[in-house]
Length: 201
Picture 1 (cartoon, rainbow, N blue to C red):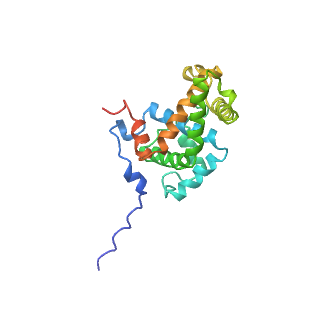
Picture 2 (cartoon, rainbow, N blue to C red):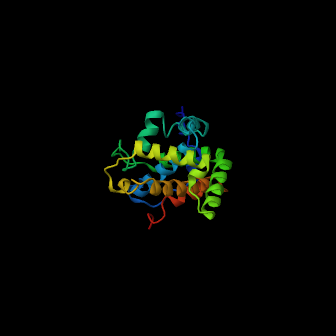
Picture 3 (cartoon, rainbow, N blue to C red):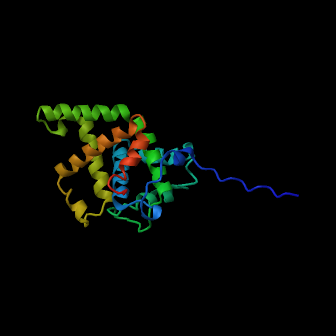
């Protein structure tokens, strides 16, 4: 009697939708890990519950086989070499895809908020006013600075460059632009590709 064929392992459609870039050993380069984590940090600064929503989204997006639980989620984030609790493990492409997917999933919920903050920032810049003239924008920047400084290693040269609030605010605003980029048509695919700009031969 013929043996039963082995059950095919389920693969989330999201993993299939994002192409595998031609990178060494099929793991994420340093710049990719940093940039991905920074964008997720900006998303967290927009919403106090964003981290929990990301964890919930893993199941909703059928990605729990890639990132299994809360510990796995934070270990994946901690592959950013600029973090205080940096993990020396590599970040696989599949885990990076899962982080991109949950980040974009939450970012879409924040689209109106992100657009509003960026519009306010542009209006203030035109009037040569500082961000603290807008309470919502100032709140976002303050939360981002707090998250950044509590999680990043101040002894790293790249982090020391953001010692001044003005430099850190510039980073937070540029990341806000990237969060908006994630929310657009094919935003997940475009954000994924942007993480490997200059890394793929």
